Image (cartoon, rainbow, N blue to C red; front, side, top):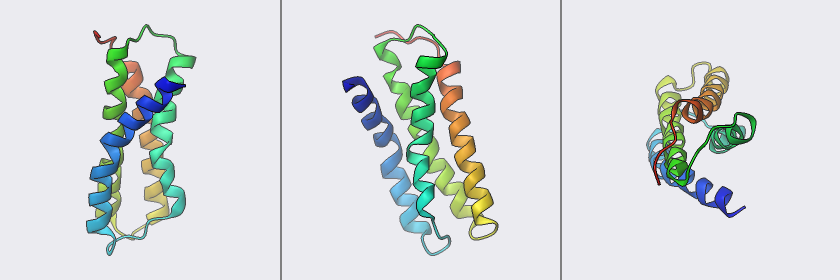
Length: 115
């Protein structure tokens, strides 16, 4: 359980500060929906569940993957701000789906890192 908490904190360290800046500067251009907060859960859950569905020998060095997965969230928020209010729900759903895939791809493509 402690591993889950530590890796989620690492994920948030990679995603929260930059995402907060993007949202602060883009809040007049776009309206964010409450359900878009799933962007803070879906990539992490996908990355974490990869360990239970697809077995690969991973070490504690791979905890840095959580930060890489977390960096996808501010990129998605920036894309959301760039698109503005044009097809907002479609863009948001697409970006959350891409974040889902991003979490899985980071898990699958990152080799076992040394501790």
